Length: 216
Image 1 (spheres, helix red, strand yellow):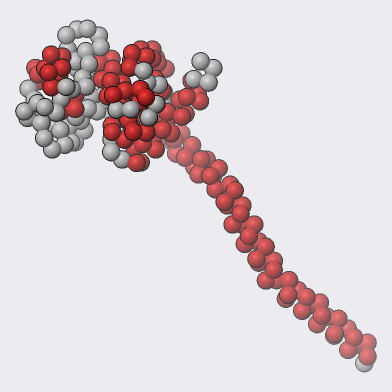
Image 2 (cartoon, rainbow, N blue to C red; image 1 turned 120 degrees about the vertical axis):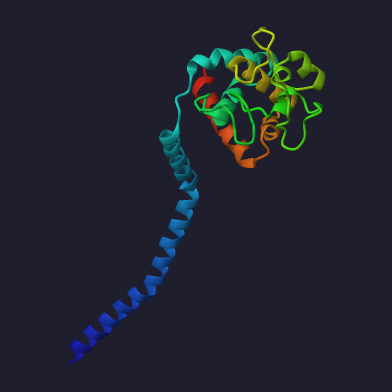
């Protein structure tokens, strides 16, 4: 009888210890999960983002690098920033048509009033305007109204649907709005007033810096 009582007490004591340890175990696992997520959460986000990029990505047009470099050098901005804008705006000109529902035009999606200049008498609102086509691409008209459009190839036409003209125009805009002074975020935000847009541009800019500019 005594042995049975001792066995029962021993079992009760062991069971009591297990019950006492159970909440502590739960707390320990919870803390590990919380701190583990905090430590590796950014890595998980980066992995998910990279997976999404691979699914929806378009090939980087390395043949365009000389065009990016030429425009960026003239206006004193990083060529990788220009490439990032080209990627976000029209997926490297693979969108068809190169005309947005609100009227942004060409390879780098300029609103006509930004391209020609907001002092044009038809400009208001979002900037679609009612600018005649002959004026819209005329360098003299653009200079008169203070627009950002550039005739990069010297053919007498500043055309947002010409890639070289469009890239130089975008570089001109970014440079005059902060990028030439190193304030990339301000320039990007001026291009499109959206924090999400700024984040997207910077993500591609940093990627192209890493992939193409580390050894240059």
